[in-house]
Length: 85
Image (cartoon, rainbow, N blue to C red; front, side, top):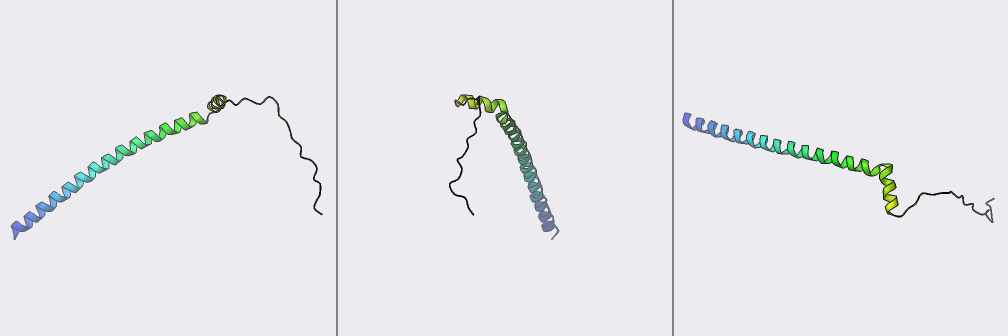
């Protein structure tokens, strides 16, 4: 009886130790992945910031053949032929 209990407790100890070790390894993997994703997120935020800058937009517009306007013009619509009562 005592031997059976001792074996059961020993086996339980091994199982729990294995679970703790596996959980610790998984936690470390998740922390590394989280750090990697945070780094990528910061890099993407930097790229977005650069591409949203007025200088970048102006350069892209020039590459597309767009030119700055030199003069604005207002277009007037003709008077309506009929008006609602």
